[in-house]
Length: 229
Length: 229
Image 1: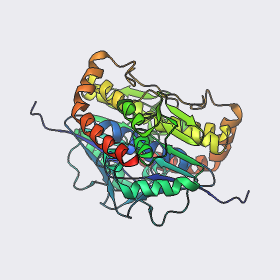
Image 2: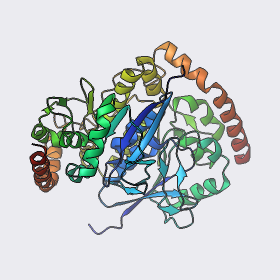
Image 3: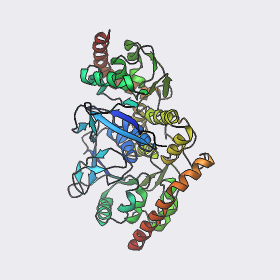
Image 4: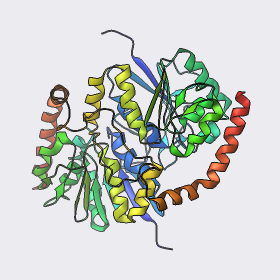
């Protein structure tokens, strides 16, 4: 098999939720014949949402045409939905990409780039109501596949998303081998991973804690949606 | 509550499996009142097992006494089990730490430091047979708690491990709130995450693929065990 390597790119940005992309990165890094790129405007360290600083491997300008473009999420997407340089990069890559994908609130950025109009899409449970501003159909699921848009739910859904995508890009056996290698046989110690199962007081606490951020997010989404129309 | 911040440290090293520590890092970063350190010999970028380069926040020499010390895994642990500087750092920190922990093959490094003698411990499924060389009792589970040793299974078990540890460090409600935030409601697309459930041909493929590496690992473990006795 002498085919050209599959080009997979994950975009970075300040205040990305690092697990949104380190989960898929771990999966994609085990894919035979794939080259993985970490992409940002410039090759300089990018602060994540934690103490981990992220180092891009290629700039927007130097990035080759990707087969898979993936946008992770995090509070930083509130800025990215109005970042013309990011949106232009995504639109340009989307023209030639085989799969246009996201994890968590990364789908809001795809939406702001006009890439989800008429598509079903997943996102973090706290962001579900914002997707329709971009003409997307909010879909409550871990992994949402609609034609060549593959979008994951919140944060840890990125692992389910990436294994699913590997099965589409390659085959099921390859995805299963990666799952075995990553011992992805999850056993959450509690049953609080979704608003449907979390204890009511935990859900109320989280909703209260993000209330102000949700208002700010709504304003950013409104600006982004107005620009798009 | 004016208590001193909880000091949580994750050690880095070349060829660490990045998801082994980025999973727990995401969980610990949401823990109120905790300071998280990424620790290596020097403050210089460390190559992971993928294109992601990791930047430590503190050196071994400058690291404060930790409440939680955590060793992630990866092929790089084959070198770390014989790395005197790493082993001395772990032994020094272990004297004052509240919890001594690991994910994946990180438990082999704890073992090589003499910190698991007489303790039950978990590790990656491919490394289970090596734990007894260090006097540990190999335990097939996602999260293994034996007194103040808390060890996780392979790679993704780090998320289960970290949520469990947060419930011990803080309380169950805090762990549940973090689980909800990370939407940790896993739905693996395949059932291949353990040698017990993987399709036989997938398991055979993986065993064949790691055969040479297992021999090398055995040699490194033998050297480490001989040094310890």
